[in-house]
Image 1 (cartoon, helix red, strand yellow):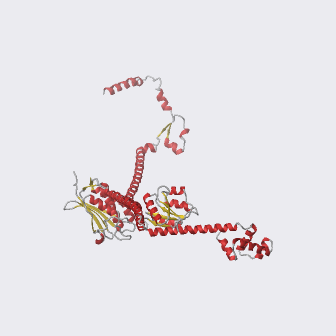
Image 2 (cartoon, one colour):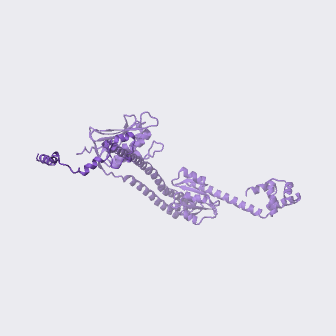
Image 3 (cartoon, rainbow over the protein chains, first blue to last red):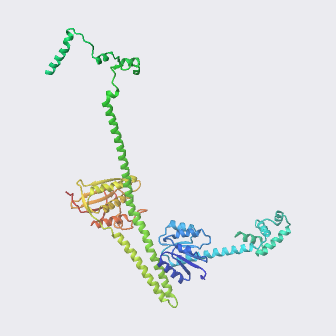
Amino acid sequence: VREDATVHLVDDDASLRAALARLLTLLGYQVVVHEDAAAFLAAPPRGPGCILLDVKMPGLDGMALHERLAADPESLPVVFLSAHGDIPMSVRAIKRGAEDFLAKPVKRELLVEAIERALARDRGAREAAALRFARRAKLATLTPREAEVLGHVVKGRRNKQIAADLGTTERTIKAHRAAIAAKLGLRSVAEIVTFCAGL
Amino acid sequence: MTDIRAFGAAIGVRLGPILRGARVEKAAPDAAQSWSAPVVDWRALRRFGIDEGRLAPGTEVRFRAPSAWAEHRAAILGIAAAFAVLLLLIARLLQERRRRLRAEAESNARMTELARANRISTAGELAAAIAHDLGQPLAAIDANVDSVALLLQADPPRVDEALAALADVRRDDQRAVDVIARLRSLFRNAEPHPDTLWLDRLVGDVVGMASGAAGRKGVQIETDLDPRPMRVRADAVQLQQVFINLLINALDAIPEGAAQRKVVVSARRLAAGGIRLGVADSGTGIAESERARVLEPFYTTKANGTGVGLAIVRRIVESHGAQVEISRSRLGGAELSFVLPDAGAGT
């Protein structure tokens, strides 16, 4: 079930790192440990997964690392683990898009729940990205003229109006629309509009 | 006598020929000149508005009114000297005032620093350090215990791995124990270095330090000292810390808008021997049931208190071989007091 997702654990405390890695491995997760922010940034993960991030670390701390990661839309969801987090800190982390902010020591159920939510979010983001990618690929098969007609169609314009604007006949527009629907695998105008809205 | 006679004789010798009709050839040249020089009256010059520069050279001006400088020289010098003295005095006073303001600011800073040292650094930073240093091993122990359970529940049980996890649990447990040992040594390290201290002066110092805070709260701090100077053997810095903490608490105990706003620091010889030191306030007092707990570490009744101040007071007082007593003060609030041995008034 989780074979493709990796939990990245960033914590400077070797013994806690080992303990969490052991537990998460036993729970069926793939775990990669990083001993500090610099080590994590040196080899940023590309595959699906999430990040368990300690707040207090020498060098770049967890908050600073998260700030950097948050700037990258494709970065993995972050779950903070903190031994001395306070409310302002957690609010800042959540506002910046952290999945959760947990206090150490954390109960196993809470940790697993947070990891699952983070992985689900990553999965959702990846699916949405894949869908967007597939739709863009389909759109790329349209001719320039068909793309122009599509632009008018999604604005809700009628064939007659489009024909007048493009200086051609209603029949030609109809033919273009049929070609667009065939290429994108869509039938109704509603479907076409929905298809284009997510891009 | 002889001189006058000789002088008379000389004059006689000179006058004799003249009186006998001898001709005098010519007068002494200098005398002739002085008669010929014009002489004018200065007052007349002034009256007719004649410029002195237009007078013939060598004109003698007589009856000149003495100048203000010549006439009032002594007075002018006196006034100038008085001005100089006044200026010096003003400068001195200004300097004094600046120095006092600076000293006041310094004592305020010291007071805040002391209070901060107690409240924030001791408690806040300590709490953060404890949270982190204990949190890490506890979190690791937690995770390892969960792992051990999973390893033993496996079929077949993975005993070797479970034992490895248990070894890690023991190691982290030792880490937590070390943290606690460090913490205890931190609290224990304050061995007093006793000196013979003049109490009157120490009380004056701490009241001075607290006066800024008292002024801001509109509270009056009074002292009630034995008329004869008192000495005790105590660690000066620690005793000062005790008073500062007690004063801060006393000031905090007086509610906003209370009519009576008074704190009394007292030091009195007891008939039974020893010197009783106390800080009393007109605040809300401490309920009988609370008295045992207020001296405990991390117990606080203040919204943003840390519960460290009175715990420090107790530790210091006890390290001086005394006990902190809590009672109702005559001002209506609480009084915290302790008795130190009298070190005599000295020689």
